[in-house]
Length: 130
Image (cartoon, rainbow, N blue to C red; front, side, top):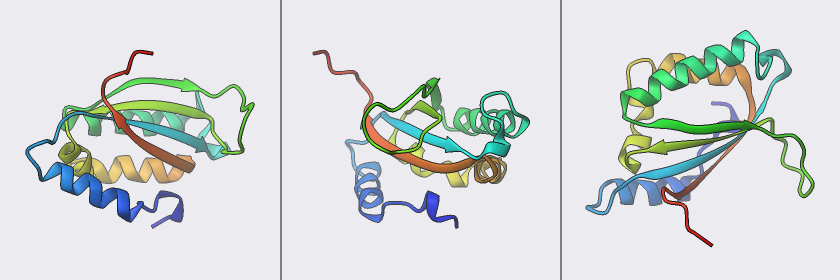
């Protein structure tokens, strides 16, 4: 497995506990992706294949991409990023089941060909008004 996608073991334990509890519910995952140049983000074939496979995979568990937006610059920090995605999952259990779905091999294969670096943040599904 590419170290870029190595799971945070402590966070996965938290997610597993929530998924097996009676308090499991929707969750928003914020994905910050840096693509390899050959992916051709945002119009290249590799990137388009990745998005197509990702949408199919998410649909299988009732999840969806709420939005994805290009990163124009980074006035603070040094995390490389080309795109930020907001992915809504109906449950933590659904998120954990991604690898078990039909078509997951294709989605993860495309991801491995496109994504140079990825960071995923788990957030509440609702937006907290300020």
